Image 1 (cartoon, helix red, strand yellow):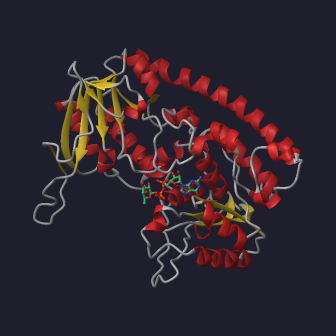
Image 2 (tube, helix red, strand yellow):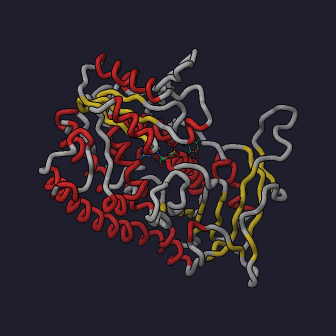
Image 3 (cartoon, rainbow, N blue to C red):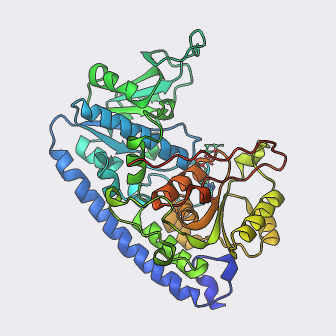
Length: 442
Ligand SMILES: C[C@@H]1O[C@H](OP(=O)(O)OP(=O)(O)OC[C@H]2O[C@@H](n3cnc4c(=O)[nH]c(N)nc43)[C@H](O)[C@@H]2O)[C@@H](O)[C@H](O)[C@@H]1O
């Protein structure tokens, strides 16, 4: 059948040929927006920065097994550190670590390394919060793929002293196996996001216990070179979790326009959801986006994030069985008089089959191969999040940062917290505490 060649599969409507026309138009929009985005990102972001004197670059990386949304959280901490460094008079720029080799991005045969941030986020929006450059811009500006100093962050081998937590930082011998090795020229080689030509001039281990800005004096006084990379940056805590600065950075993490467009078209076609009807208008300029709490109505569907894989392998108490999840979904649909349910999940093939059998009405965003190559697993995850963020009612998975980022997106859009901060309970969970409402601060 001719329509089988078309792109995204909505389970709910999978046999209708007219969808092909829709997907082709999406594809055209995707291509147009994307090329514009990449061009403007490269040109607007560098010019004023490259001209500055004594420019210093902060690079960072995160523990390899960590997922996409945890990494988004670490970005917020690093942006906060750069703001502190700049307040203290340093001309610092944050270098965006290319995406890739993430454990959860399991679509095989697709090259998912060296992905610039511009593929997933609006660089112009990030720039309006703190100066950032893509890694390849850094290489160009820096005159080559050399990082002057890598600081590998680690905890304190001895843990807390006298059971007391205090902020501290010291150069210490590395107590984990170092992921860097010296080459014949005396440079250090490491993963460096898949850029084999990148080398570090020096690598030092630092024990750090504290908030991100604990690094500021160290970077201003002890390591005065041009480029410093913090590896294992997740070791540092947020300066102020969910304060104004946190929210400014979080609001600036606007998804790339082509991904939002695909999500919007999908909502319109398969979920009867548009911004006008659902009161979810979005402003391109995040600094002017201040939706009144409770003003968003959301599309007429239930949004679900059902985290599986490594969340069930550990037999966690707070994660439901598929049967338990479906029971909750059906109850919520009835309660909120919603006929449609959109499901975002990382469930494997077997579980998906089971889920579809129990919930034949469910709608999913499942791009075929040729789209996946363009969007990549990260793009699909963002579109899943975007669609969940526009639902009339949302339920997520306990302690998943994937669900947390959806909470935040809904907070930005102006949803009533009662429709957002909900999670599945484990089948035998006794006290099923619901997620905390982190109120947006402007
Ligand atoms: C147990 C821990 O869980 C933490 O994950 P958690 O906070 O849920 O959230 P993330 O840090 O985003 O990692 C989970 C990854 O799994 C995929 N994934 C999960 N749910 C979905 C979904 O609904 N749709 C799509 N398209 N993809 C999904 C996606 O690649 C996502 O980045 C990890 O960061 C840690 O490394 C560790 O694995």
